[in-house]
Image (cartoon, rainbow, N blue to C red; front, side, top):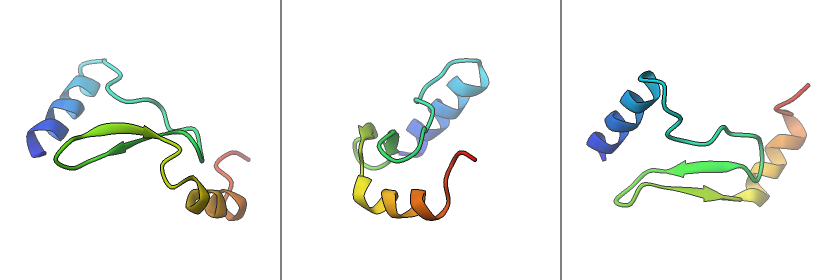
Length: 58
């Protein structure tokens, strides 16, 4: 997992976009583990609570 994260950061530093921009509840979330992947709507119900208390925009 360490190699994967380092490679992603190096790609980012070199100007690539290795992950999607987070845009609030329901957006893309990178899940780190044995299989690193991008998930959409990951824990959407739990994140919606925080969006109502601490809006990302405004």
